[in-house]
Image 1 (cartoon, rainbow over the protein chains, first blue to last red):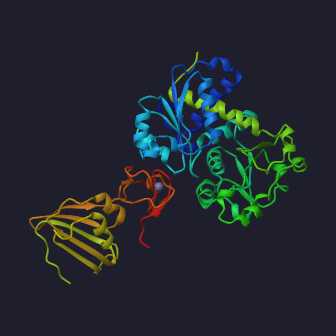
Image 2 (image 1 turned 45 degrees about the vertical axis):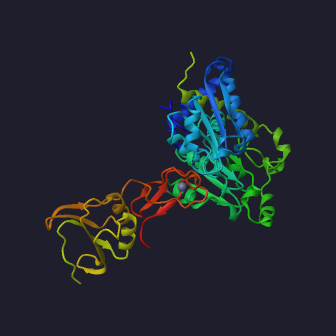
Length: 309
Length: 142
Ligand SMILES: [Zn+2]
């Protein structure tokens, strides 16, 4: 049962619960007006202890499109947080007014502290480099809508596989489906951390390969998940400059890929996908962003236990 | 070495040699108020070398903490000079406010009142995982 639950990491949901959320998201996409009043009278609190316009807009748009209302803050300086209030006290106070809360926080596990302090559902909208479950829901929904499911897919992940938390969550979530294979494309320095390689892939006997070149593996991929190399992850500017342009997906490389390969990206991109790829029907990253709002609508409804006739 | 047996209290025996100090530390037994016998590196038929702790007039210690630090130790409760209870220790599934999370990015570094909670991840390696940030610590002695 999803009603009343907090969602702090993707593995908080069983595969059956994921299917429930995706089924509802599909219904919403098919007929948005049917859900325009699903959350009438309900209030979502968005607690953003660090700015993230993209994620906050996606949640706020989701609630507003369900007929609900939104309160919250988007920078901690303007709030009681600046006066040193604890997360536990803040969430208890917010729970007096709101029905559900979304939290983004620079510290790992902050939404867990919040969820442990209240009965109100709390959704983690990113806690430092730790978890970002609604991004994973977005990725999975986009794959499911195109491929019909997750079994037997060969999924390539490219770029920064070391620091990219969306990559780690996606690998973890997909590792629960039969026949999934991974091709991990990255420079030596940005390979997946040990807890993913040993703890998830090897522990579950999931086939995977680590390669340095994108071209050679493109023909076999069903999904290519691109990521951006983030400047703030590097101590050394030279390392960043050396690695950031290593993988650029362009029209020429797209010719090597099979005709049904999906290109995904959590956005924002810098230059790792050339703009010329945007018009390729296999480029699905903007559709992915739109799905992000729909899947958040579905998640909010499920956690509030709301059904529509 | 011979230490007189106690009338009433607790004997923690078969402690892995070298762990006794840490156990006294974590149990927060007031070493000024209580009479304590602490033997390091005693020879044991079973274990080769061991530590041993006797605490007079104390019969309740935190068994969870003991299990966490040394699940192989044994605990005897003494009343009127006799063993009235033998306790076998277990690795606890969850410990609260015993291990501190050392990850500087963990929320416990800023949220002062949040309890430090760790969950058992792997009994073999005695690895525990932080409730909040998933940081892993091993409780095994080096
Ligand atoms: Zn922690």
